[in-house]
Amino acid sequence: MVRHQTFAARVFAVLLGVGQLASVGCFYHKKYENPISKNTSQPDKVLFDKAVDDIEHGRFEVARITLNTLINTYDQSEYLAKAKLAIADSWYREGGPHGMAEAEAEYKDFELFYPTMPEAAEAQNRVCLIHYKQMDKADRDAAQALRAEDECRTLLVQYPNSKYVPEAQQRLRDIQEALAEAEMRVGTFYHSKGSNPAAANRLARLVDQYPLYSRADEALWELGDSYSRMGNRFRKQAGDAYARIVRDYPLSSFTEEAKKKLKELEMPIPQADPAAYARMKYEQQHRTRLTLKDRGLEVLRRGPDVHNAAKSGAPAMTSLRPTVPVSVPVLAEQREGFQGDVSAQTISGSSDLDNKPDARLSPPAAAAASAAPSASAAPAPQSATVPDANLTANERLAQLPSNHTMSEKERKKQQKKFQEQQKKYKQQSQKSEKKPPSDTAPKPAATPAPSTTPPPSSSSNQ
Image (tube, rainbow, N blue to C red; front, side):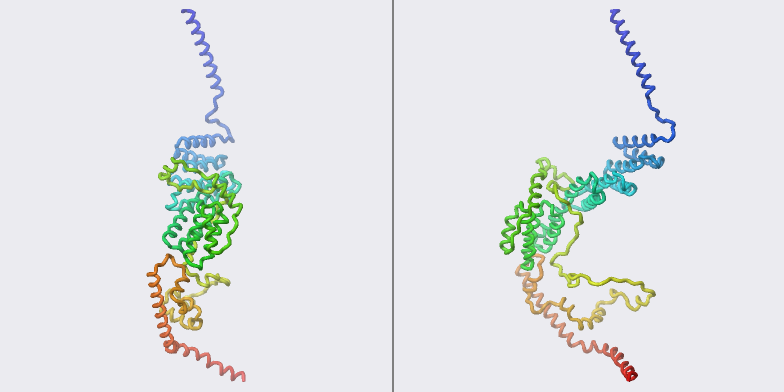
């Protein structure tokens, strides 16, 4: 018993000695918390490390106060740019509409103050992500999708050598898949409704702007069908749409039907593009497959469904511009375009404003009366607004593309309306032929004045 106690006492003494040595060693190797020395960067580093630790533990407000203290106190610190970026990261991690808006503003400020730093591309990538995460489904407001497209395109243009370029390209393809899906739904609605010019307008700009869209072949098929319903005037446009399916989308399920349509239209069938064939083959092999769980959770997802987005190809680098439907008539001046020079000059005084008032302030009757002589001198502009009397109602209606398929009852109604317009125009023309002598009587009174001046000059010459 005594032997065991002696052994335990020896072990306790040894452990006590080891503990004392360890405490002495730790005391001598402990760092100073506040060293008094000159030209040191430790205080700003301590503030930065503390702020980073607060961000990692969710104390965002405390972290921002610490970082602002660093920026205001050590204006020559090497951590100044990192502190500015950390403030933006704190807002980004905090999330929410207010946090995302503040984060975007801070990232933009960082790019403005430090455009040449490698972190500038990271800041622009975060701005793109801010709008990408706030995107809605394709059938809802596309404001965030359009902003995300612009910001991702800015990243590719301003930082082409950044490591974020591949990620931004794929994100841009996803965004354009959602935007194209929105256009496709509108075009399909017009097509099913029978509004052929509206459907053709939407689908044409869709396939031209987003050729990488997963349903571009279906959009081309509906585009060709819309043009076919609009009559023989748009036979070429319909054939071009079908030919584009065969050439640019050779693996599409609409390829064989498009070839049959080209045979019916007696148009040549183009050969498939090898590059387009390879691209479609790659897309089929690398397309994302949704599981049953993902399909069930799709209803709860806020963002759009982009699992069918392209995985290769260059995304569109221009914004989608609205176009004019073919049902809207185009004037000759607009078709030919403006020719000439535009000049401007500074007017001194108000004489021109007094003598030449704004034409918008004059009543329509006065404007028509003042334009009557010019119209009689140049009858060409009237023929553009007056219906051709040599054409029948059916021929005139066939010239204009209908916004929907007209029934026989509607066609007869339009024919009757056209005949009434022709009758009314004839009556107005007969009245105008009788009125010119009385209307133009005051005008010759002003013109004889120049005719009285030549005789004196001729006599003086003699």
